[in-house]
Length: 46
Image (cartoon, rainbow, N blue to C red; front, side, top):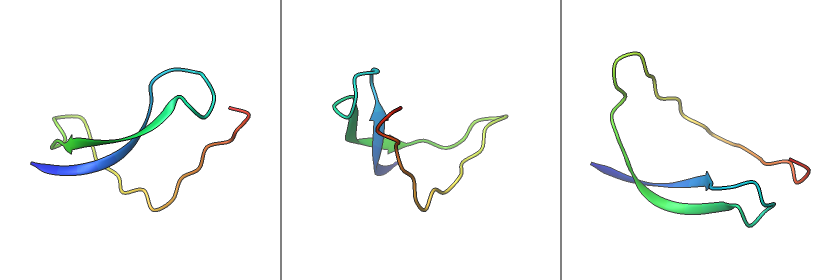
């Protein structure tokens, strides 16, 4: 399985809630799809 880095939100506690973690990229199951994200951002107010 392919290993990736993912930004994950574990709770709603400002910037410290987002953690970059290494995880396994799984294959999409029936009814799911995978999209490629080239850029993303987080609004500090959110």
